Image 1 (tube, helix red, strand yellow):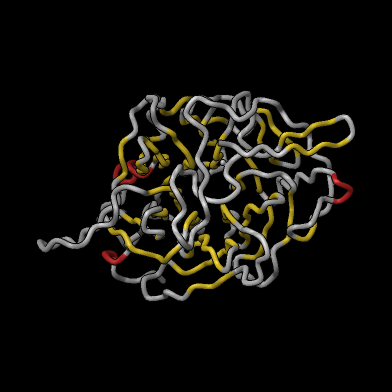
Image 2 (tube, rainbow, N blue to C red; image 1 turned 90 degrees about the vertical axis):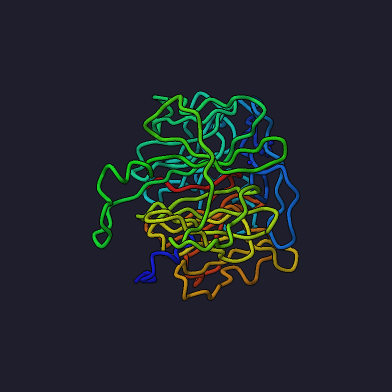
Length: 365
């Protein structure tokens, strides 16, 4: 059960890796090897960010071929026979965007006809959202058709890491009918302008609309002022749960925050780290924290009275970054220098490499 107090719910320039096999060049990498999609220096304790591609630039338009089949390998090891291992399937729901025209999903690669950066899926899995080569926020069908420019980049800004926000009716909360929940039907993303990071949002039903700044805040409903969370430096938002909660990182503070405005705005510090991801049920989060020179994955509950953290990768000998939850909340996928690996959300098994494709992992519900 959640904490009964509603007021305390404080809430990759692309790196392209060329894998050369006989007669074939597979372009399969883009995005920061580690760190947030933000052109800011990494604070101590977080994954080191790499500057994103300037608005309008494209890291590559070549379409990599269909991935060769192969069994998963231990994390950090080379692919069997030096072949590319796709690692995605309809069964595991895993997808990988590489900053090129193609997205790995269902065991193959799909050409979206445009550069796809930081792909994220709608809650029902019917639509993808991403940043295209012009820096615009775009939605499309899973096969790349039906592309719609949801928001046009005005220029001078770098957009990254969209996430689909949504909320459903809570039977114990009044005034949460369909009309009241419409404000949660939005995509939240990071905007960088002049070195300043902010979270912005745009309604999913309003193509062409001008994004609005999302300003995390806190309100106890009383007259006394209370401390407010940072308004700039915010990045890497990720939505989850039925209340439209968002976790995000604040780069200057090297802090992860949980934002919940289902009833009234509330923002809560969740610990030192970066690149957070909220579980589908909103009950847990995973984030990145540097430990002894390597980026580890940590989890904790989102409940206010349960602050214990767990290092899922205590024996890490490489960097584990950009985590994503499976739809059932049982598995976490993440990026390594060798591709994509997964582990159980409880950390009961060591990481296993499932794909040699280097990109951003996400799950299609």
